[in-house]
Image (cartoon, rainbow, N blue to C red; front, top):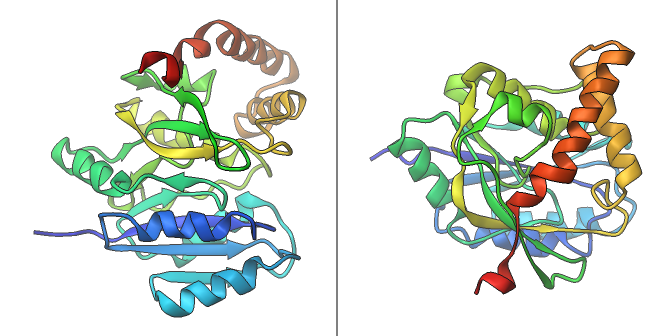
Length: 260
């Protein structure tokens, strides 16, 4: 029985507080045939020394260093050139996977003959405490739905290189994950998520998602520069985006404590 290699792309930048736990969550996977490609984006803290020490003990972990700080998009693209796996998966340097994440996803892809999937995920704070919040998604996510809201958590997406090839996104510095999923959904039209939480997303005080103004700015850039829309149409798209954020997406954010 074929056990395909999964390539895990992890950009890092000044991640000394979190990177060890992130790597351990990969090492704890029940699915063992993986490689973890970490591209450090010119960190000034102890990230490189921490990863180097771990990599010496586990040859599935490979570290590459950028010569200057270029952003997570460039780091992910650099990692993509190093990947050897049939499947490409993503995990940022402060997020965590649950132990059966890869096993469940690979089985789901193979059993349903799918080239792409993602899952729900739970949220934790900067200290790693669970926030009793689960982010879900439509059970049959269409390109149109994704166009107005990024329902796919970057730490949960996985795609088949045999079907798509290696997909490079480089038009703007932020929101590359959304652009990647849009590229994929434009080809396959819709995707089925795995309807359970397989990962923990860490909400940090200085993150894009924590700054609503920055989030709006970067999302507008997706419509303006990635899609190439003119100013007026991009503003109309942002109206649809805001409508989705205010009235539709909240339906997919669950209070897990209340549901127990």
